[in-house]
Image (cartoon, rainbow over all chains, first blue to last red; front, side, top):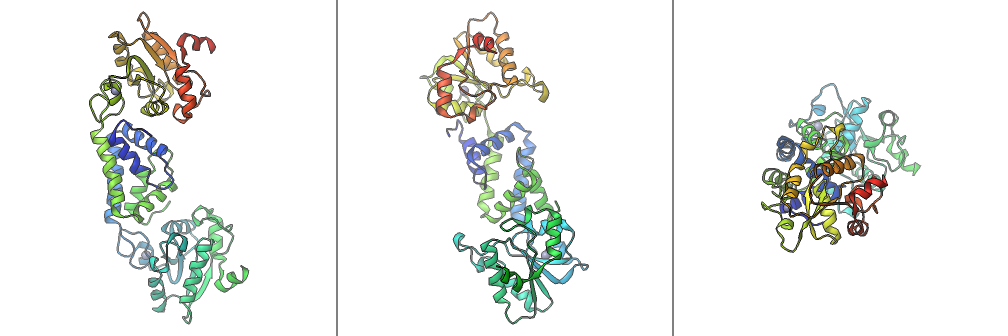
Amino acid sequence: MEFSSKLLENAVYEMSQLPGIGKRTALRLVLHLLKQPEERTEHLTHALSKLKNEVNFCRSCHNISDTEICEICANPKRDETLVCVVEDIRDVMAIENTSQYNGLYHVLGGKISPMEGVGPQDLNIVSLINKVKEGKVKELIFALSSTMEGDTTNFYIYRQLEGMEVTTSTIARGISVGDELEYADEVTLGRSILNRVPFENSMKAN
Amino acid sequence: MEFSSKLLENAVYEMSQLPGIGKRTALRLVLHLLKQPEERTEHLTHALSKLKNEVNFCRSCHNISDTEICEICANPKRDETLVCVVEDIRDVMAIENTSQYNGLYHVLGGKISPMEGVGPQDLNIVSLINKVKEGKVKELIFALSSTMEGDTTNFYIYRQLEGMEVTTSTIARGISVGDELEYADEVTLGRSILNRVPFENSMKAN
Ligand SMILES: [Zn+2]
Ligand SMILES: [Zn+2]
């Protein structure tokens, strides 16, 4: 792709570094911004910079939050004996959307994936184990996606919990195997939380 | 979509204002940036702001250019008697890519589209007519996409040229009707420029 302007080329290059955005799409987006009033670009760049510079993760559950402790963790009406372990904040949003769950969350920040160089030390696992050690948590619900990496991560955490007094469960597999949580419809996802099964059972099923 | 952070919500909102980027895609892109080193966001926002603030359009052909007159217009080896009329700078890039064309361009900046509220006065048509009036241009090649708006625009310009000594042609329709220029393969697009037909003929064909 030959550019008539270095400024344009550079903007398209940076835009095309985003996942799923090829050079042509990047060019289309950048030219769109050029046609819009200046405020459009300003608002976009300002919002992205502000988020990146000021973003805060809940000290307890690692969800994105504008406060030190997120609204969910700080809510006294939520059941703090129940912790749902998810990969990503998008999964928190998806489960919250179902209005079927009243416990807390723990955002791992990814899945163990040797292929992508993600090990247990790269995820928020130590803080999860420490949370369980404190003794308040009665049940951990594993809600990772049902992929090999998800299963590996579940199992790694499960073994770390050995000897601790905590029940483990996984969300019911109403969601088809291999599907991402965030794309599941609300009814299915809500039901799969209500019908969660003990983690040991889910292993037998495999 | 319920957000746990206003900063996040705002960034996703601004990102989702881009064409073809829904809320979910916007969230994915924003969370990707959050996971990347800070420089990634800085480089992106800086490149977009710099382009928007410093962008310059060639005084002659309206192509994006870092100089007052673009490299194509300033190149003495290009044939200034030949002007290819295009909708968008993406079309300039697509035609340049074919290496089949040695004339100049004129970027209209859109097509006449009453449905979208785009009239002749919103496009770079006056400067095109003035360019022809100066007398150097021997041939105008219409290379707008073969849609109703493209045809309307061609015809509008064609009528403005009445009485002037200039040949008009349209690129050969090797490109399937309704297709966007920028998605045509290089060989087809290059050939359709070489085999351009007089504009009058293209009207008869319709
Ligand atoms: Zn929290
Ligand atoms: Zn120019």
